[in-house]
Length: 307
Ligand code: AMP
Ligand code: MG
Image (tube, rainbow, N blue to C red; front, top):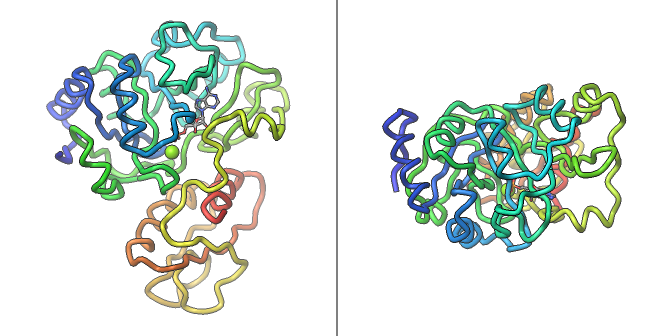
């Protein structure tokens, strides 16, 4: 397994591996993903095995051109068109009614499919070169922290990959927003890179709130998720030199100062947790951000990491 620079030759090599049914780690603007040909059920099954991901946790399918939706979704409602126009390529995943040819492994047996057009140029190049949509969950073992750079991808996972394409740091740094477009009003299943406010403004309707039975039906919504090995403890202020993420001046080498802006915070969060976790502390303390709705996705991940 090699980490390859994002050249045309590397992308061609990775695309060839995908067509042979192998797995490749690709950079996206949200986090790094483990990608396989979405129409190859064996390859998709290998992703579940490599990640230790439960079979009831469906994957996001990544496209590079709108017309690839034809083979994936049975219909593309007007509201989904509006969101695609406004936010694709970008960190928004839409759940749509699935087309019959999509292997049930990708959607964990559901009759819906989650689709996204990523913005990272290397991801787009890889999808185009492979010539197929790519099923790609985050390139981490199940429940662990998502990688936002090649160095975050652990050895166990690397062993199952043809290569890692190095696309630098993932600029958004948090997973995509997942929105269910099969219901009206559409429902945010996971807050992420595109804010609720921006989606509401684009659609001109308030979005639905998530009912608890839907939470259980929306697979992958496990209470503990996105977590480092250390126990994450949310606090108002870290009073001493304990390892953690702070807003003020760090009181020791094990503290990392985080930005006050929610977008910059999101971008830095997983890298900061990965770096602290490498020292194998028992606990990582995180100062709770206080702020408006723009913190929704960050707070969601911090809550899941500390569950
Ligand atoms: P990941 O690829 O790990 O970032 O997670 C993808 C997440 O998208 C899953 O864990 C689900 O929560 C969500 N998802 C994927 N497909 C569907 C679907 N068909 N219906 C509802 N949620 C989905
Ligand atoms: Mg994941």
